[in-house]
Image (cartoon, rainbow, N blue to C red; front, side):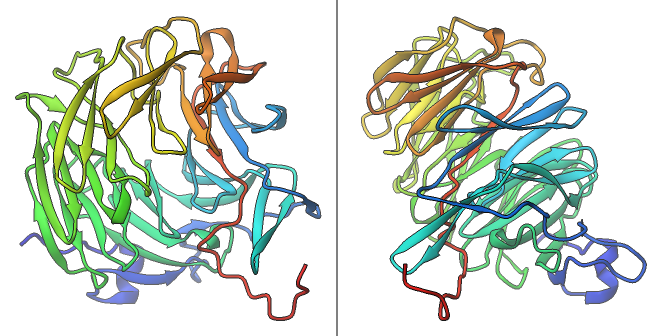
Length: 427
């Protein structure tokens, strides 16, 4: 059995030998803190609106823009130097920006509050807040079951907290460190179990499952070059490997082997309403692949599907009904039936494009919010909104920046948030 996760130095003195620690995020007397923030983000008075207001965020060289996902109007433009990455934060309102110094909280400015059998919806001006979760090298952000988990590739530190408490300076956080720093990932399940990657700076080899007390209950080393994660129906987790994938379902780890000696699945796209996961698939490290993988988490079977043209890893998404979506080099959005494994529709969206040798260069991104697929076209500085159900491009807009990464939030009520309405009206 491998050594249990070790606490980071700043928390070890508090928790003695415990493998996992529940701590408050507020600063200690010496100023050391896991997440630096002045307070909850200060904004103007919210405006109540009649429905959810979905938001998009896109990065460009020098900043981040927040857009109204319905009108594609730019609502805010925040300066931020460096190569910045975007992740939905888990509460349907905020984004976490992987930037210099850590994960910085971006307020999309739209949210809902459940109230009995309905919800109330509000908007404020979007803003890049002062809330920062410190990280030497901010990596993966995974939001699931009302919890948000951050992985610091520079230290191996894992930080988890309630997604609803993102902007709360007194949030409670679960923290521990992996045995060695690596480009890793962690996923927390509803009952507190945690899947954590295993690796070093030089190689990544497998995953471990920890129970709610931090004790190892399962592990595998048969996952070279661990990368990517997704959660499917019934909390089945799929992790990508250079020789296939690893499935954690029903309390067991199962290896799903690639049909090729080198068959890398590095990025997976699941939905909690479908047992089938969509993934990329490469037969060599230099492969510009036109093949994708479908993994059935109920049978642990992998099926390969050939597309009309190659793709790159950020041109994937899942539709509202579980469809697989892949924007290929020919500029078409391929709609895949995950059950039959067939391409059911090919929607022309952008001009033909190709992946460059530098993955940080702007490339087309695909993000789905409320059944609409948003597709960036960096070469033309365009953003397109595609109705997946009809195949119609119902809106396109010219941007004044070259878009790089794209992310979206629904602006809806967070189903995991706890709201007390005992003293409120019934409207």
